[in-house]
Length: 140
Image (cartoon, rainbow, N blue to C red; front, side):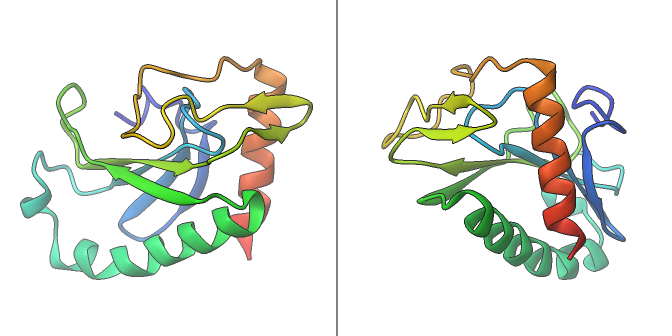
């Protein structure tokens, strides 16, 4: 699952039990993947230590993304249908278009549930700048 989501290139921050990656398919601006390091196939199977670390990470994600891009909401999807390891798709939601590095990002399914097949096609330069911006923000 890590490799599918571009690891190590897309790694934003590593915690003791989790990793944040920048989602290669940007459904909305700054779409992320939060993946558990426990090698399990069900949320109920992650370690107590992983569970206890999760609230801190969620607060950090929500604060950093709000400060960076002023999102309106955040959706968390834990599908685990194709990629079996425990992970969340974290989708900041925007009621209006957002510009980043000259590219206009659209939240194509706002205000409805996110459609993860509706992506913003961006080039590698913009994607790399997004990764860099997120890494700097999450260093603090």
